[in-house]
Length: 558
Image 1 (spheres, one colour):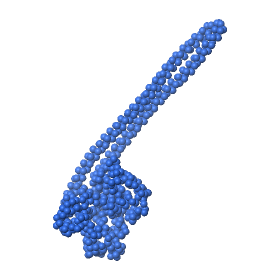
Image 2: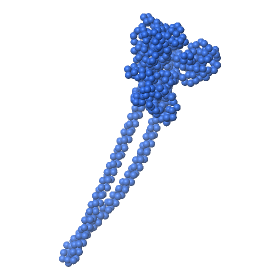
Image 3: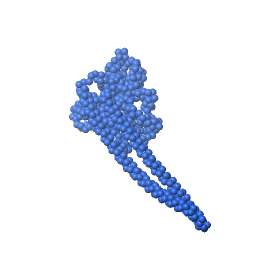
């Protein structure tokens, strides 16, 4: 029989004999997909109550499920306590695609600012470093990055969302696919609805409630609030699980605490809860035991692969940095060449101006020299006339008057030439001052340009050193990376510091554009959680305080 199995990454067409059991099909599927960490996954179809009916452990043949196999799905069944437990890259990728679908379809509630940050990590995982030329507006129009709920709740157009997403995407430069997917999963792990499988239940009083089955235990929720459980029972406090029809019975490990019952909607739902409870409890025990030889080998192989990837990435980054530095220097040299050309043209223009000024000055000097020579000649003539006047004191009156007139005219001519010489002398001094001022101005411009080049070189050197330091810090951070040692509850994963400013700006923009009429009940609860400084793990720590008996009583009285 032909089957189509939907997976978080792609659909698979396969053939299986009708007598093949669900367990055999699941094992064969894991082998064909190359998945060794098969304990996280399951094979399911949708039941009559829209519940996931798991067949990965079933010994029944496919012929028994034939009518339900049209929507057969290979999907995440169990979640780790901490996503850093995931070993192989392919496992991380399946989790990433599974959870990403839940985020964009709003199955898992996610606030708008977190949704934008997650979208930026998803883009880094799929496409690598942001490139403005390749990822333009048309690219964003064809993608689905955010839940419809988020888009409807804010008066922001596509460009606003795009700018916010790319503003964070550029901050992820250098992260490879696996690193980006892991950063995505770390943030999703903070979300209250992540890793929780919800079921409608009642307590013995008949109050409509919800049960959340998780890797950390069983959580009890009020019907209207899926974000904050009212009480919780970690797996370490649960000794036994049993079902009787629609009654799901839990026996605590605390001998002082009584058994208590959960009323489900059907016997089938009771069996599904039991299966999920047993599976999560087994994984809880398994985590607290030494790894099996197979898991040890798997981790060693995965670590070797990651070390090789780190070395390859370091080599690639070094080559990229060298290439970028060469391109930067080439650009710098081209710019310097252009600057030199401009400077040469400017100097040539200045030189032509200087030559024109010098020629003009030389012309003035020549005129001055000629005027001085003429002045000297006129003075000599005047002196000769004066001498002649002295010699002919006794000449006739008419001749004497004529000579005196000639002397007066000559004297006026000498004065005129004297004034002209003084004017030209003054103009010559002015031109000399202009030449000197131009020379000083030229020297000042050259000095300023030299200072600007020095400062620019220092700035580029500082940027290069800072880039080297950041790269070294990242490598150091990778070498020091260790799984979370907290065996009780994971720690809340904080956003990287270099993303704080873009997120704050986005939060301000979201607040200004918020449509309060579109706010859901979960939005309201989330906002209250933020105001009270609560997060998923803080809430769990708070509601787990006190003994088991008190919490059983609290659940039964809800």
